[in-house]
Length: 367
Ligand code: ZN
Image: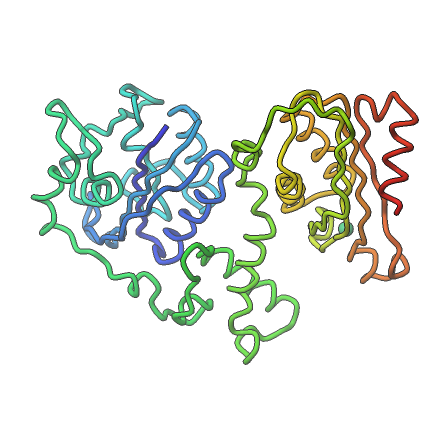
Protein backbone atom coordinates (compact mmCIF):
# COMPACT_ATOMS: atom_id res chain seq x y z
CA UNK A 1 0.00 0.00 0.00
CA UNK A 2 1.07 3.56 -0.60
CA UNK A 3 0.99 6.20 2.12
CA UNK A 4 2.00 9.82 2.52
CA UNK A 5 3.90 10.78 5.65
CA UNK A 6 4.18 14.37 6.74
CA UNK A 7 7.54 15.21 8.33
CA UNK A 8 8.30 18.34 10.35
CA UNK A 9 11.03 19.60 12.63
CA UNK A 10 11.88 22.83 14.44
CA UNK A 11 14.93 21.71 16.36
CA UNK A 12 18.02 21.39 14.20
CA UNK A 13 15.91 20.53 11.13
CA UNK A 14 18.89 20.48 8.77
CA UNK A 15 20.07 17.44 10.66
CA UNK A 16 16.86 15.84 11.89
CA UNK A 17 14.79 15.96 8.72
CA UNK A 18 17.34 14.25 6.45
CA UNK A 19 18.16 11.75 9.22
CA UNK A 20 14.48 10.85 9.59
CA UNK A 21 14.22 10.32 5.83
CA UNK A 22 17.41 8.21 5.84
CA UNK A 23 15.89 6.07 8.60
CA UNK A 24 12.68 5.63 6.61
CA UNK A 25 14.79 4.53 3.62
CA UNK A 26 16.58 1.98 5.79
CA UNK A 27 13.42 0.56 7.31
CA UNK A 28 13.01 -3.04 6.15
CA UNK A 29 9.25 -2.75 5.63
CA UNK A 30 9.16 0.71 4.06
CA UNK A 31 10.13 1.74 0.56
CA UNK A 32 10.55 5.45 -0.05
CA UNK A 33 9.12 6.37 -3.45
CA UNK A 34 9.48 10.14 -3.27
CA UNK A 35 10.48 13.03 -1.04
CA UNK A 36 9.09 16.56 -1.47
CA UNK A 37 11.14 19.76 -1.36
CA UNK A 38 11.32 21.30 2.11
CA UNK A 39 9.22 24.28 3.24
CA UNK A 40 9.38 26.74 6.11
CA UNK A 41 6.24 27.47 8.14
CA UNK A 42 5.51 29.32 11.38
CA UNK A 43 4.94 27.16 14.46
CA UNK A 44 1.36 26.75 15.70
CA UNK A 45 0.70 27.78 19.33
CA UNK A 46 2.41 30.23 21.69
CA UNK A 47 4.73 32.78 20.07
CA UNK A 48 8.47 32.50 20.26
CA UNK A 49 8.74 29.01 18.80
CA UNK A 50 11.22 28.56 15.99
CA UNK A 51 9.78 28.02 12.52
CA UNK A 52 9.12 24.51 11.31
CA UNK A 53 10.72 22.89 8.33
CA UNK A 54 8.27 20.54 6.61
CA UNK A 55 8.38 17.90 3.93
CA UNK A 56 6.28 14.95 2.78
CA UNK A 57 7.40 11.43 1.93
CA UNK A 58 5.54 9.03 -0.34
CA UNK A 59 6.14 5.44 0.75
CA UNK A 60 5.05 1.92 -0.13
CA UNK A 61 4.59 -0.55 2.71
CA UNK A 62 2.92 -3.79 3.74
CA UNK A 63 2.48 -2.47 7.27
CA UNK A 64 -1.12 -1.74 8.26
CA UNK A 65 -1.79 1.86 9.39
CA UNK A 66 -1.58 1.00 13.12
CA UNK A 67 1.75 -0.81 12.78
CA UNK A 68 3.13 1.90 10.53
CA UNK A 69 2.16 4.48 13.11
CA UNK A 70 4.00 2.65 15.90
CA UNK A 71 7.07 2.27 13.67
CA UNK A 72 7.03 6.03 13.08
CA UNK A 73 6.82 6.60 16.85
CA UNK A 74 9.92 4.44 17.36
CA UNK A 75 11.72 6.39 14.68
CA UNK A 76 10.77 9.69 16.35
CA UNK A 77 12.05 8.40 19.68
CA UNK A 78 15.33 7.38 18.08
CA UNK A 79 15.74 11.00 16.99
CA UNK A 80 15.03 12.28 20.48
CA UNK A 81 11.35 13.20 20.23
CA UNK A 82 9.22 12.77 23.33
CA UNK A 83 5.46 12.97 22.87
CA UNK A 84 4.61 13.77 26.47
CA UNK A 85 3.39 17.07 27.91
CA UNK A 86 3.18 20.32 26.02
CA UNK A 87 1.65 19.78 22.59
CA UNK A 88 3.30 22.98 21.36
CA UNK A 89 6.82 22.13 22.45
CA UNK A 90 9.62 22.28 19.92
CA UNK A 91 10.10 19.05 18.02
CA UNK A 92 13.18 17.26 16.79
CA UNK A 93 10.95 15.38 14.39
CA UNK A 94 7.26 14.82 13.79
CA UNK A 95 6.15 11.99 11.54
CA UNK A 96 2.45 11.57 10.79
CA UNK A 97 0.52 9.42 8.37
CA UNK A 98 -1.69 11.88 6.50
CA UNK A 99 -2.87 9.49 3.77
CA UNK A 100 -2.97 5.70 3.51
CA UNK A 101 -4.16 4.01 0.34
CA UNK A 102 -7.63 2.45 0.69
CA UNK A 103 -7.93 3.33 4.36
CA UNK A 104 -10.20 5.69 6.21
CA UNK A 105 -10.56 5.47 9.96
CA UNK A 106 -9.17 6.03 13.41
CA UNK A 107 -5.75 4.80 14.39
CA UNK A 108 -4.84 5.24 18.02
CA UNK A 109 -6.77 8.51 18.32
CA UNK A 110 -5.67 9.90 14.97
CA UNK A 111 -7.87 10.24 11.89
CA UNK A 112 -6.48 8.98 8.59
CA UNK A 113 -6.78 10.65 6.11
CA UNK A 114 -5.81 13.70 8.16
CA UNK A 115 -9.01 15.82 8.29
CA UNK A 116 -6.90 19.01 8.28
CA UNK A 117 -4.76 18.03 5.32
CA UNK A 118 -6.35 20.58 2.98
CA UNK A 119 -6.39 23.36 5.61
CA UNK A 120 -2.68 23.89 6.24
CA UNK A 121 -0.10 24.93 3.72
CA UNK A 122 2.66 22.95 5.47
CA UNK A 123 0.63 19.74 5.04
CA UNK A 124 -1.03 20.05 1.65
CA UNK A 125 1.77 21.64 -0.39
CA UNK A 126 4.46 18.99 0.27
CA UNK A 127 1.86 16.19 0.05
CA UNK A 128 0.82 17.46 -3.38
CA UNK A 129 4.47 17.42 -4.47
CA UNK A 130 4.82 13.68 -3.87
CA UNK A 131 1.26 12.56 -4.70
CA UNK A 132 -0.31 15.17 -7.01
CA UNK A 133 -3.09 12.94 -8.34
CA UNK A 134 -4.08 11.37 -5.01
CA UNK A 135 -7.78 12.06 -4.44
CA UNK A 136 -8.88 13.48 -1.11
CA UNK A 137 -12.03 14.51 0.69
CA UNK A 138 -15.71 14.35 -0.18
CA UNK A 139 -15.20 15.98 -3.55
CA UNK A 140 -12.42 13.53 -4.46
CA UNK A 141 -10.26 16.52 -5.32
CA UNK A 142 -6.73 15.93 -6.45
CA UNK A 143 -4.04 17.14 -4.04
CA UNK A 144 -2.43 19.23 -6.75
CA UNK A 145 -5.66 21.25 -7.10
CA UNK A 146 -6.17 21.53 -3.35
CA UNK A 147 -2.62 22.83 -2.90
CA UNK A 148 -2.81 25.60 -5.51
CA UNK A 149 -4.32 28.33 -3.23
CA UNK A 150 -1.67 27.65 -0.57
CA UNK A 151 1.44 28.14 -2.66
CA UNK A 152 1.84 31.82 -1.77
CA UNK A 153 1.42 31.08 1.96
CA UNK A 154 4.51 28.96 2.33
CA UNK A 155 8.11 29.37 1.30
CA UNK A 156 10.13 26.68 -0.28
CA UNK A 157 13.59 26.22 1.20
CA UNK A 158 16.18 25.88 -1.46
CA UNK A 159 18.12 22.65 -1.22
CA UNK A 160 21.33 24.51 -0.41
CA UNK A 161 19.65 26.03 2.63
CA UNK A 162 18.88 22.61 3.98
CA UNK A 163 22.61 22.08 4.39
CA UNK A 164 23.96 25.46 5.55
CA UNK A 165 27.49 25.94 6.82
CA UNK A 166 26.80 25.87 10.55
CA UNK A 167 29.76 25.29 12.84
CA UNK A 168 31.12 23.10 10.09
CA UNK A 169 30.20 20.05 12.12
CA UNK A 170 30.11 17.46 9.44
CA UNK A 171 31.13 17.10 5.84
CA UNK A 172 27.65 17.60 4.38
CA UNK A 173 27.46 21.03 5.96
CA UNK A 174 30.51 22.08 4.00
CA UNK A 175 28.53 21.51 0.83
CA UNK A 176 29.97 18.07 0.28
CA UNK A 177 26.68 16.33 -0.07
CA UNK A 178 25.98 12.76 -0.90
CA UNK A 179 25.17 12.17 -4.55
CA UNK A 180 21.75 11.03 -5.71
CA UNK A 181 20.92 7.54 -4.41
CA UNK A 182 23.62 7.77 -1.78
CA UNK A 183 22.75 8.02 1.86
CA UNK A 184 22.42 11.50 3.22
CA UNK A 185 22.28 11.06 6.94
CA UNK A 186 23.87 13.92 8.87
CA UNK A 187 23.14 12.20 12.18
CA UNK A 188 25.10 9.10 11.22
CA UNK A 189 27.88 11.28 9.88
CA UNK A 190 28.03 13.27 13.12
CA UNK A 191 28.28 10.04 15.09
CA UNK A 192 31.22 8.87 12.98
CA UNK A 193 32.88 12.24 13.46
CA UNK A 194 32.40 11.95 17.21
CA UNK A 195 34.02 8.51 17.20
CA UNK A 196 37.05 9.88 15.33
CA UNK A 197 37.42 12.61 17.99
CA UNK A 198 37.10 10.09 20.82
CA UNK A 199 39.79 7.96 19.25
CA UNK A 200 42.16 10.92 19.38
CA UNK A 201 42.20 11.98 15.76
CA UNK A 202 41.38 15.31 14.21
CA UNK A 203 38.43 15.03 11.81
CA UNK A 204 39.22 18.51 10.49
CA UNK A 205 42.63 17.68 9.14
CA UNK A 206 43.09 17.35 5.44
CA UNK A 207 42.46 13.81 4.38
CA UNK A 208 39.84 13.19 7.07
CA UNK A 209 37.44 16.02 6.34
CA UNK A 210 35.23 13.83 4.19
CA UNK A 211 35.77 10.70 6.24
CA UNK A 212 32.54 10.87 8.29
CA UNK A 213 30.54 11.20 5.07
CA UNK A 214 32.48 8.37 3.40
CA UNK A 215 32.10 6.06 6.39
CA UNK A 216 28.37 6.78 6.62
CA UNK A 217 27.98 5.93 2.92
CA UNK A 218 30.13 2.81 3.21
CA UNK A 219 28.23 1.52 6.25
CA UNK A 220 24.95 2.25 4.53
CA UNK A 221 25.99 0.11 1.56
CA UNK A 222 27.57 -2.67 3.65
CA UNK A 223 24.36 -3.06 5.64
CA UNK A 224 21.97 -2.68 2.69
CA UNK A 225 20.89 -6.31 3.17
CA UNK A 226 18.55 -5.13 5.92
CA UNK A 227 16.42 -3.19 3.47
CA UNK A 228 16.42 -5.60 0.55
CA UNK A 229 13.93 -8.45 0.45
CA UNK A 230 14.28 -11.98 -0.84
CA UNK A 231 11.16 -11.49 -2.99
CA UNK A 232 12.70 -8.49 -4.72
CA UNK A 233 15.81 -10.48 -5.59
CA UNK A 234 14.12 -13.66 -6.73
CA UNK A 235 11.47 -11.80 -8.67
CA UNK A 236 10.67 -13.65 -11.92
CA UNK A 237 13.87 -15.70 -11.95
CA UNK A 238 12.38 -19.09 -11.04
CA UNK A 239 11.87 -21.53 -13.90
CA UNK A 240 10.15 -24.87 -14.28
CA UNK A 241 12.52 -27.71 -15.09
CA UNK A 242 12.66 -31.51 -15.14
CA UNK A 243 16.35 -31.48 -14.25
CA UNK A 244 17.05 -33.43 -11.09
CA UNK A 245 20.85 -33.37 -11.05
CA UNK A 246 22.65 -31.31 -8.46
CA UNK A 247 23.07 -27.64 -9.36
CA UNK A 248 26.24 -26.14 -7.91
CA UNK A 249 27.48 -22.56 -7.82
CA UNK A 250 31.06 -22.44 -6.63
CA UNK A 251 33.34 -19.68 -5.37
CA UNK A 252 30.75 -16.95 -4.83
CA UNK A 253 32.74 -14.07 -3.31
CA UNK A 254 31.13 -12.48 -0.31
CA UNK A 255 31.93 -9.67 2.13
CA UNK A 256 30.23 -9.34 5.48
CA UNK A 257 30.70 -7.59 8.84
CA UNK A 258 31.09 -9.56 12.06
CA UNK A 259 28.45 -8.49 14.52
CA UNK A 260 30.84 -8.56 17.46
CA UNK A 261 33.44 -6.10 16.17
CA UNK A 262 31.85 -4.64 13.03
CA UNK A 263 34.98 -5.71 11.17
CA UNK A 264 34.87 -7.44 7.79
CA UNK A 265 34.93 -11.15 7.23
CA UNK A 266 35.08 -12.30 3.65
CA UNK A 267 35.61 -15.35 1.53
CA UNK A 268 33.81 -17.76 -0.75
CA UNK A 269 30.46 -19.46 -0.63
CA UNK A 270 29.59 -22.72 -2.39
CA UNK A 271 25.89 -23.31 -2.85
CA UNK A 272 24.24 -26.46 -4.22
CA UNK A 273 20.69 -27.74 -4.46
CA UNK A 274 18.84 -30.78 -5.83
CA UNK A 275 15.98 -29.37 -7.89
CA UNK A 276 12.39 -30.47 -7.52
CA UNK A 277 10.79 -29.02 -10.68
CA UNK A 278 12.03 -25.52 -9.90
CA UNK A 279 15.38 -23.93 -10.72
CA UNK A 280 16.68 -20.39 -10.27
CA UNK A 281 18.93 -18.14 -12.38
CA UNK A 282 22.54 -18.62 -11.28
CA UNK A 283 23.23 -14.92 -10.74
CA UNK A 284 20.38 -14.87 -8.23
CA UNK A 285 22.27 -17.23 -5.96
CA UNK A 286 25.11 -14.72 -5.71
CA UNK A 287 22.56 -12.00 -4.95
CA UNK A 288 21.00 -14.12 -2.20
CA UNK A 289 24.47 -14.50 -0.67
CA UNK A 290 24.89 -10.69 -0.83
CA UNK A 291 21.46 -10.14 0.71
CA UNK A 292 22.49 -11.89 3.93
CA UNK A 293 26.17 -10.87 3.84
CA UNK A 294 25.41 -7.17 3.84
CA UNK A 295 24.36 -7.19 7.47
CA UNK A 296 26.04 -7.62 10.83
CA UNK A 297 26.56 -11.35 10.95
CA UNK A 298 28.15 -14.40 12.45
CA UNK A 299 29.31 -16.81 9.78
CA UNK A 300 27.24 -19.75 11.08
CA UNK A 301 23.99 -17.81 10.88
CA UNK A 302 24.86 -16.36 7.49
CA UNK A 303 25.41 -19.89 6.16
CA UNK A 304 22.08 -21.08 7.53
CA UNK A 305 20.21 -18.06 6.19
CA UNK A 306 21.48 -18.69 2.67
CA UNK A 307 20.36 -22.34 2.93
CA UNK A 308 16.97 -21.30 4.35
CA UNK A 309 16.45 -18.84 1.51
CA UNK A 310 17.17 -21.45 -1.18
CA UNK A 311 14.78 -23.86 0.57
CA UNK A 312 12.12 -21.19 0.80
CA UNK A 313 12.17 -20.11 -2.84
CA UNK A 314 12.78 -23.50 -4.55
CA UNK A 315 11.53 -26.13 -2.12
CA UNK A 316 14.20 -28.50 -3.50
CA UNK A 317 15.09 -32.08 -2.50
CA UNK A 318 18.20 -30.80 -0.79
CA UNK A 319 20.40 -27.76 -0.16
CA UNK A 320 24.08 -27.54 0.73
CA UNK A 321 25.96 -24.38 1.62
CA UNK A 322 29.62 -24.19 2.60
CA UNK A 323 31.28 -20.89 3.41
CA UNK A 324 34.95 -20.33 4.03
CA UNK A 325 36.03 -16.94 5.30
CA UNK A 326 38.84 -14.94 6.88
CA UNK A 327 37.87 -12.70 9.76
CA UNK A 328 39.57 -9.35 10.24
CA UNK A 329 38.68 -9.40 13.91
CA UNK A 330 40.93 -12.43 14.29
CA UNK A 331 43.59 -11.46 11.74
CA UNK A 332 44.07 -7.82 12.77
CA UNK A 333 43.80 -8.24 16.50
CA UNK A 334 46.40 -10.99 16.53
CA UNK A 335 44.06 -13.63 17.94
CA UNK A 336 44.82 -15.98 15.13
CA UNK A 337 47.46 -16.24 12.43
CA UNK A 338 46.82 -14.48 9.17
CA UNK A 339 45.53 -16.66 6.42
CA UNK A 340 43.69 -19.09 8.61
CA UNK A 341 40.07 -19.37 7.67
CA UNK A 342 36.86 -20.56 9.16
CA UNK A 343 34.59 -23.04 7.41
CA UNK A 344 30.87 -23.41 8.12
CA UNK A 345 28.26 -25.57 6.44
CA UNK A 346 24.52 -26.11 6.30
CA UNK A 347 23.17 -29.36 4.83
CA UNK A 348 19.45 -29.88 4.24
CA UNK A 349 17.26 -32.66 2.83
CA UNK A 350 19.10 -35.09 0.58
CA UNK A 351 22.49 -33.58 1.36
CA UNK A 352 21.91 -34.32 5.01
CA UNK A 353 20.35 -37.78 4.73
CA UNK A 354 22.43 -39.13 1.86
CA UNK A 355 26.18 -39.41 2.53
CA UNK A 356 27.02 -40.00 -1.14
CA UNK A 357 25.31 -36.76 -2.24
CA UNK A 358 27.15 -34.91 0.45
CA UNK A 359 30.45 -36.54 -0.59
CA UNK A 360 29.84 -35.62 -4.23
CA UNK A 361 29.25 -31.99 -3.25
CA UNK A 362 32.33 -31.86 -1.03
CA UNK A 363 34.42 -33.38 -3.81
CA UNK A 364 33.23 -30.86 -6.35
CA UNK A 365 33.98 -27.83 -4.19
CA UNK A 366 37.43 -29.13 -3.31
CA UNK A 367 38.71 -28.94 -6.89
ZN1 ZN B 1 34.44 -10.33 15.25
